[in-house]
Length: 385
Ligand code: 3PG
Image 1: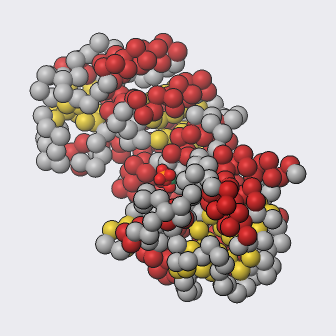
Image 2: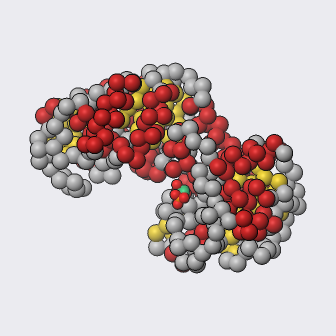
Image 3: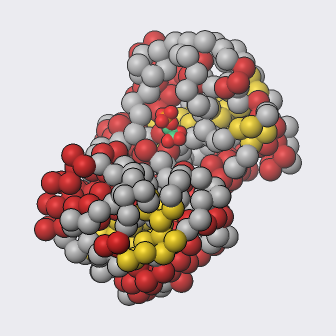
């Protein structure tokens, strides 16, 4: 694909698609990782003397409708404070945007436009007509074939990849395409069903697979142990058994259980074969966590998505912390992605010690599954003609 760094942006109208879909509470941005990740791209365009328009979605509003709770105003305000320059938010922008060289405007939530999610041709052409150069930089939304990611890239005079998108593709490619081995994947989270295809794809490329959280409960059950009232999926036990037959999935020796799913539940450490009917597994036990930490210490590449326990409850956060710390301490090239994973990394203050933190959630998982990201495929096809 063409990289923005190789395109002359001086005095050009440059439309940048970012993923500024960040959590907002009471009109304030509560986690700005995605905004900070987009800053270098935006600064590069401003420094080149471009007329910069940035677009993004926020949340999932009713398509085609303005809904104040999904307005990008909090993002514009936050972006302005990070950049130290005005960032006007333009509400009606499809028929043209006023912007000077070296200036930046944010245009209102792309999902307020009818046709955005259907990749509508007329809408895509309107977006394309706003610019001389379209920069696709929203890795987090690259798995969506929408007008502002895919359609506009088809019709813009020039369509290129921004530095953030390029860096994401490079980091994930390095971890998956020809990784230094052993490659160890850590997949946590609550359900096997939502990550089954990810687990199956990883089973073909990684040397060891660590499963955590509710996912690991299904594997514990698949080994024939009682999991009590633990979150698990009985109907997926055969799939878990197949994965265990195909691949080295380390067995847990002990777990932390509670008798209710709550912040104040007391954590009791139990051998994995002694979970009672009224108990639920909510975290790794200390021995299990240590075994996993040893494995991670010897890894050369690590791919991490999903916490290893109910880390938002302090009594059940130790397992995720030990695993996160082991990933941070490891000399491996480590890549982490997904909202909960990033929240865990923040909670333990380890962001600087992970080699690459992806801004993608769904896009990260689809990349790992080996799926084509439609917006990237469009940039590739544009680069060829
Ligand atoms: C995300 O947060 O994963 C992206 O911003 C995509 O959002 P979506 O799932 O609403 O398309």
